[in-house]
Length: 128
Image (tube, rainbow, N blue to C red; front, side):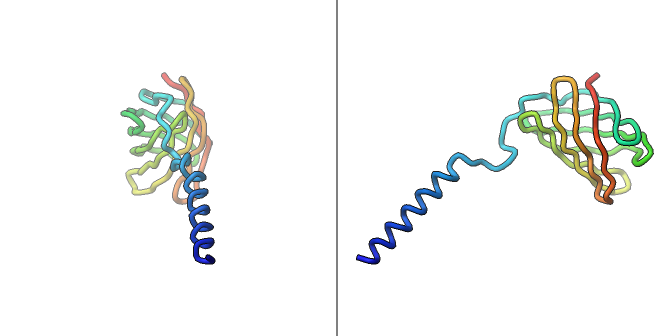
């Protein structure tokens, strides 16, 4: 009798857990609701920034160019678009890496970049 109660209790817990996680998908599984393809330019902390991106499905790639006090030069970029969020990583020619996390509207991108050496800044760029 005790074993049946234990099995029943475990079954109820497993069933509850399956309902709890059934609707949960990993972060970033949402389809892109914006298209980041094109040329973008504007300001970043301490200077200017431009991005040239190509988007295929949820994947985005291209280049980033900074011209500023804290960071200058060009990097390659690989990322993903989920909903209206673009996240990804960049690699500069000297091997320095970093990440970008931004929100995209039809004509603007705003957010932050963070480099592996601790440098970071804001991004405010527009399409065109």
